Image (cartoon, rainbow, N blue to C red; front, top):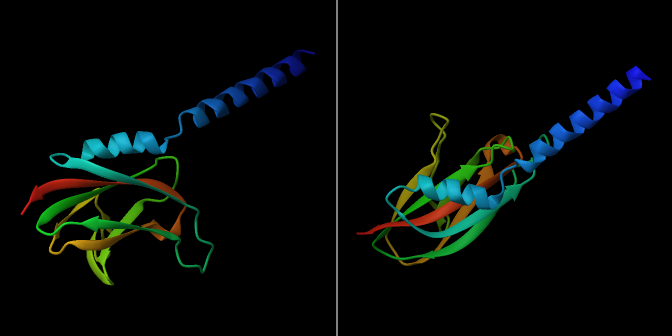
Length: 150
């Protein structure tokens, strides 16, 4: 009887710890608040939440595209924050047509930055691509901020 009581107690304890862990999972809203604070001297404009499953071996990493309009002679900041609850670190790329204009990832060094600035040279549509390092599963928030007029 004593062993059964101990087993039941340990089971309840394990269940309680599992629920505490899931209750502390980061939400998209929490990531927005964290990421907005990292944008420093910039003014918040919009946020994009991206959640992707991991790629199977031999597959291309999943990615998500967001389209946005940017104005000429304006400096923007893209800040990305990845959830601690998922293994993937967010990588962002900003394109105009098919030309890469900015990225928070430097392939030569493997360095990933929290933010990248873009000095917009023409008004028009731009495309934000987000994927996760090594095709891992991930949740991230990208904050678009206004820095200054050029």
